[in-house]
Image 1 (cartoon, rainbow, N blue to C red):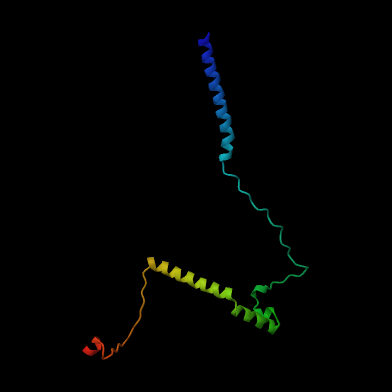
Image 2: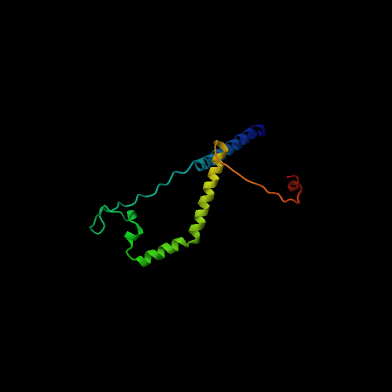
Amino acid sequence: MSILEKPATNQHTTRALLSVFVVGLLLVIPSCRIPCLQRADSAPPMPESFNGATSPDNSALLSLDEFINDPLLTSLIDQALVGNQELKILEQEIQIANNEIMARRGAYLPFLSLGAQAGFDKHSAYTPIGAVE
């Protein structure tokens, strides 16, 4: 009887391991998929008019002097923009980026430049080169 009981135990163990493996696989497989993309909610529609007034004019097309009628305020704004250290730094960073673009472009594109130079060297009479002259 011990011979007959042994195969039944192996078969029972094999079934148990197979069921544990299948259940584990069923738990793991759904977590391997790419999640669905989340879309933003659409914004409410813009009204056709604001307080009942509509105009084809755009304030972005106006110059500063047309937009602000105070000459003192415009001169203060101009002075602030001229002396703004962050704007100066930003301008330098833009210039550096443009130079890097030109350098990288020069690495793969041929370029031609024209130029002329002239020079004259006058050596002192007390140097070996000046004594020869």
